[in-house]
Image 1: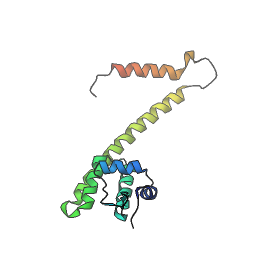
Image 2: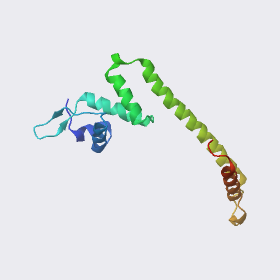
Image 3: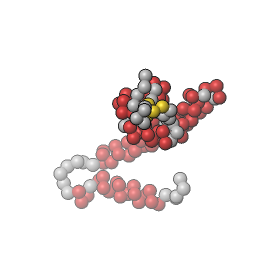
Image 4: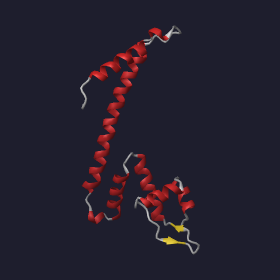
Length: 145
């Protein structure tokens, strides 16, 4: 089946500009055009676009997606280890981010727990005091960590 860019964008749930962007990034191509000059896309193009979209949802960079596409397009030229290495790298990034978010959550929980939450003046607000102290300690730490 052949699709014009608008049809393809609806099926893949992206904008036509997104498709054009991926074309400029050499992640998609359009080999055919109508007599009127409109781009035509195939089911393979739709599958590729869905592949890119899902990889983006998983947080892969465009370079990583480009590498994965290359592996997918020419599997005989690559090994599974190449794909796995890209996934492992992203997994390490996600695990680091989860650790950072957990630390952030704990810090926010401590701030929340420190506040009485009453309607008194914020002149002596424990949250503001703790943030002030934390900011002072943070600025005193050696740079480069």
